[in-house]
Amino acid sequence: MVPVKPLLFVIIGQTATGKNAVARLITPSLQSEIISVDSMKIYRGLDIGTAKPSSFEQKKNHYHFIDIRSPSESYNVANFVEDCDQVVENIDRRKKRPLLVVGTPLYLKRLFKGIFEVNPVDAKLRRELESLADEKGSAFLYERLKKSDPVRAAQLHPNDRRRIIRALEVQTLTGQPMSRLQTQDSESERRYPTKIVGLRRERENLYQRIDQRVERMFDSGLVSEVKTVLAQDSFSKQAAQAVGYKEVIQHLNGELSLVEAKELVKRNTRRLARRQMTWFRSFPDIHWVDLKPDEPPAETMIRVRSIFQG
Image (cartoon, rainbow, N blue to C red; front, side, top):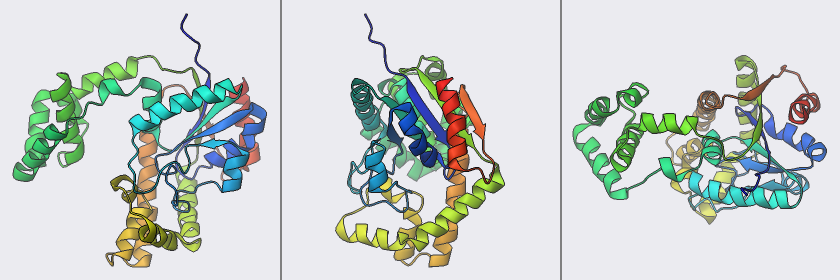
């Protein structure tokens, strides 16, 4: 008999919608433990720029996947899926319910769909394609992709070197166009039963909250936080590219003024929010909750709880 997997409660939403505040309020009534699905909150010392919950909040609400790696270490989606499967099993064994709070939609999608079938990697092939792009330009590889996978090519900009290379890499290693693999992936069954609630704000309200959050981060010592990490450790390539940290590192390197860095963080966070919403549209069964600008988290919690318990 195939074991029945536990039901996952999931809260998604763009950055600065207020997901964690709602999750913390709803945890007692759901008898849940929170799984942070966020590729940056895993890093120790990156607290202010990731809007990480305090140590007290983490302990009180039984958070998982926070502060599990040094900033110098790499951690990818495959690592997360393997680790999360074990955490979900442990939470279920304790007769608790897993509550996922999602800031990195890719991690959630791969948890649902699995990882190894659609993520072949070949370092040698990657280097060959990158060398070809250096020599002949991204447009040359884009034309190759248009001939072999016109569907995927139509989804990309001709200068999107990284994704063009990835599409060619996947096709070479699997023998199938990436667009076909993506279709098969979207049609496959989820690995867990789920209930997903999405928190959604009007764009003007969301952007205002983003700007306010960025101001708070800088006022709370984001620059000092980055200096401390740089003095004690090093940033992995992944961590160094995170919104908030990338711009402050540029400031500390003399490439940006403090004002320029702050405004760039705001702009890049808004762009991140738009990318997140694009990802969320790939999940077809989200129960969306539209939030009023002045709606308190306790009111939102009641609305979310009624969906989970309905």
